[in-house]
Image (cartoon, rainbow, N blue to C red; front, side):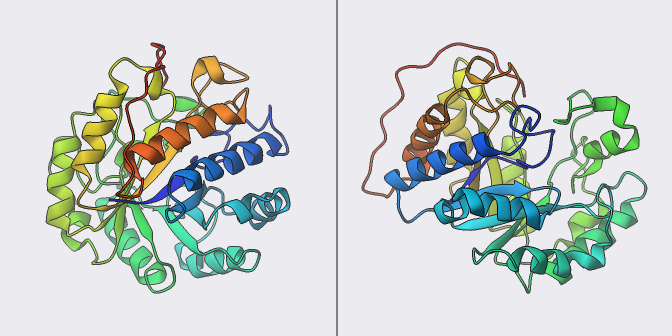
Length: 311
């Protein structure tokens, strides 16, 4: 079941929102408020989450509060990778949570926390155990990123690709399970109570295997997403339906993000949309189909446009 709908992913990160176009995040705020209202119009009881921020920045949260975004959402989510990308120690996790708690009354979730096995698989084991130790007692949801390594032939969703050096290649080693399907040492010490964040690409061949692993690991909480850009692919609804049906037994945080090329101010998935209502329409459709009250029934959309989308 879907327990929460998350609006966007890392909006204060250039890899996921083009703040050169929207330098004060005013367009993002308008879009987030419109999306939150759309979700709540379908199901007032569903939790709406501000897309996990990275970096963890209290100034950004205060900016969102000044625009009214924190009044529209229920939860503020954070992302942190101190063993790979952030310039702070893993032991600072509690301080990072308190930094955000000091500027909002909204509950705090950790929607992505992880450690790669890029340098050594033993480092990932330490990162997993220490993250659980530091965070599980203090926040309601912690989603480990991720279940699977990124296949070597796929492209990581980041702006500068290989020019980022080892920072880019760490994206490929964040999973508990290697590309060949074998578990890493961290999979054998997965802590009770920890959730997992796993993104699925369009028609992802790993979906059935993921369900198997979630069950074996005893996971209850899953964070995933469906792409607004992919919504305009032929067969998108059939794929979304299959993905969400497969995850029905878990408590799911469903992330909505990635701008369709034809609806953005720039033809890129990070672009602010030309109209916030376009995102709100998608959010209302997604909430109605996958997060509606049980008495509500969502009919299929009939206005799809067959346009390719970047993953």
